[in-house]
Each structure stands twice: as structure tokens, then as C-alpha cells.
Amino acid sequence: MKIKQRSQTKLKKNLRWDMLMLLDQIDNQDQYSNLVIDNYLATSKKSSQDKNLVVKVVYGSVQRRLTLDYYLSDYLKGKVEDWVKSLLRLSLYQAIYLDRIPQHAIVNEAVEIAKVQGHQGIGKLVNAVLRNCFRQGLKSIEAIDDPMEKLSIKYSVPIWLIEYFDQYLSVNELEAFFASLNQVPHLSARINGPAQKRSILIEQLQNEGIEVRASQVSPYGIRIIEGETFQSQAYQSGQFTIQDESSMLVAPLGKLTGQEKILDACAAPGGKATHIASFLGDGYLTALDISKKKLMILDDHAKRLGLADKIHSIQMDALDFQALSQNAFDVIYLDAPCSGIGLMRRKPEIKYQKSMTAIANLVQIQKQLFQHMVSLLKPGGRLIYSTCTLTYEENEYLVQEMLEKNPNLQVEAIQANEVLQNDLLTPQGYLRIWPQQYDTDGFFISRFLKKID
Image 1: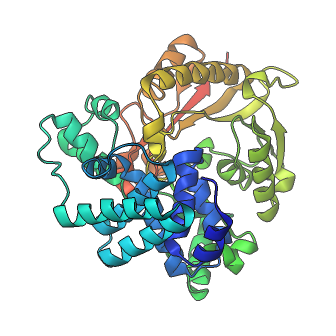
Image 2: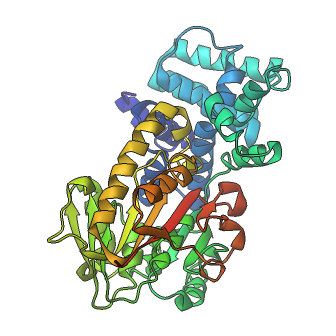
């Protein structure tokens, strides 16, 4: 969307203008919703209450895109500019899912934005579509005959994804999973240091007016309920960093003593890498990533957390990395590039972008990375393979194939005393967390030992 100067001038105080600009970046400029939102939260001068509303509407409009388009299809005929479609989606989302905003206010502000950013004709179109939706009603999802299409529209999930997970989940589990993806993701933080510091940090944040509670999933985790987290003294002084609770489970499973030579093969933007570094004494961490921009973020986080001297970051494709010798590392973390299906609540646009063909291509890269990491691992060393996806091709099926290909590897089962919730463990000794279980990202973690000859 090319923003007109008059729009910036006339609409800068309008919350729905903020919503539209963010939604346009996600819907039409292919930017990740979580990064767009994080930047808005960190830079906007709006009140905490206003920012919370903006986040709720933007996330909701992306999460419910297929549902909203289904409702709009009766009244929106012909092609319109992308930003107009985004404006209609966010307006309809507010009317359907947020009951405290009057419909007339939604229509009036949408029409104002349409006129200023577009012209009088677009204003009339937006007015007509929204008023028809409210006066004539929305068509029933229950009237859809095909059960897969009905679930697709109800939960705004492409049919191929529903058909895929239908192979593994019961009807109730399937609905719980997809319903959980339409919840607004919460913000979570990881303490910088030992788990014993968590209660101290919780008290400090509460004293700063930030409502928090302890994570049910990680002893290092804190869930942010409300408050200006990034402006807190605790954040500025490096006492915690932002990280999802699921990914906090990875670093401790290396069973680090602090003296190890460690490789983090796909390290940026650094939540996991800085967690690993927090366990180190005389050991060191080599952090690889192909993205220079993301490595800069990692380095900035490491400096703020006082861990820069523990991490040696290198911009490089992990497949091209060669250590000074084979069998060079005591512990290797491979958080492999993946389809990100476990992040669909935090990055809801993912579900509209992925396909089984794309996943099959990723699996080939994951296998190559896994095999290369085995060659860099010392006998007796640990390899932790993790993903933020939930497809079995990228997780259980992949590691089973790699075990068959590498007889010098064995599963080191994750034990019940290593996690707070035993229902995260699988019969094979892996960890699999679904978003609906504890209101987190979906995640998979497996751990292997390289046998000593």
C-alpha cells in the first residue's frame, strides 16, 4: 500500500489506521506478523490499552482470514485493491469478535480511512459492504455440507492442513488444535540466569506495574499478562529476554556442565543461543546463521544480556561450516529450518503460505543438516534436534530415518524429571508440545548420543 501523505496527517491518531498499516504489511507485503507486531509494540507511543486492541485486531484478522472472506463474499463483488480488502477484514473482525465496539463506529472509521487513503467511491463501497453485512446478516458456516470445508471456514485453516492432521488426531483433538490457533498469542519471557531467580524477577516486574505469572512449561519462563515490558528497568538491564515458552525447553536438554564446546547450527535470532550461553563457564558457543540481519539481532541480545563473550557468531550456511577437525563439538543444537506449523498462532500467515511440496523440500534440507551435524559431533557427544513444526515428516519420521542411516547414534530419551509436564513426552523419548496443551507454540525436541567406538 502506497501511503498518502494526507493519510499520515489526518489519520495518525486513528487506531484503525494503525491496524490497517500493520495488516497491510502482513497481508500484502509478506512480512512476518510477529515481527511487525513486536516492532509496533516497541515503537508506538499509544497507550498500553490501545496497543493491546491493535494487536488483538491485527492478529485476529490474519488468523480468521478465510472465515472473514467467506462472510464478505456475498457482498463484495469484483476486484478491489489489497488494502481495501484488509480494511474490510479488520472492520468485520471487530464487529464479529469484539463486542465492546459499536457497529456504527466501526463503519464510520472504516469509511473515513477509505476516503482519505482512497477516494469517495472507495468510501461508498466500504460503507455499503459493511452495512450489508450488519443489516442482512452473515451466511451460515453450518450450512456448508462438506465436513472438511466446514472446518476450513470455521477455523480459517486450508483444507490440506485439516486433511493432514486428521490422520493423527481425533475429531475433538483436531478441533481443539485448530481452535487454539485463533487465540491471540501471549508474550513470554525467559529469565537471564538460573531458574531460582524467577521468583525475584516476577516480584520486580510486578513492582514495576507489569502483570506476570510463572510459566507452567519452563522453570525459566514468565508469561506477560499486561504491561509495558520493553520499557521496564528489568528488561533494559538484561534480566530477561523475550522467548516463547516452548523454545525455552531446548537449551537445558543439552545437560550442560558449562565447560563444553557447543555448536548452535541455526542460531539466530538468538533466544536459544543466549539461553545456552547462560549455562557456560569456561566453555564456548559457536553460533551459525545464514542471515546477517538476524545475527546482528543475536549479537545485540547477547550484549544486553551480558553474554557477548560466550558467543562467537558466524554468518554462514551450516551446511558449509567445517570445524578445524571432525568430531569437534561436545554438544550440537540443530534447530532446523522448518515449515513453522507450530507457530501458526504467532505467525498465522504461515498456514496460507505452506504446502506439502514445500515441506518435502524442507525435509531434504533437514536431513542434510542432520547428517552434517553428526560428522561434527564428538563420540559421546549430544545432538539436540528440534523444530517449531508439528508435521511428522519433519520430526519423528525424519529422526527415525537418520537413526537408521547412522548406527553410531542412539536416542537419549528425555526423562520425566527434565520437564515440568510429563504429557509432553512421547513413547519414543521425544518431546512434542501442541499449542492447545499449555497455550504455547507447537514444538518438537529429540536428543541423541553419539556412541563411543
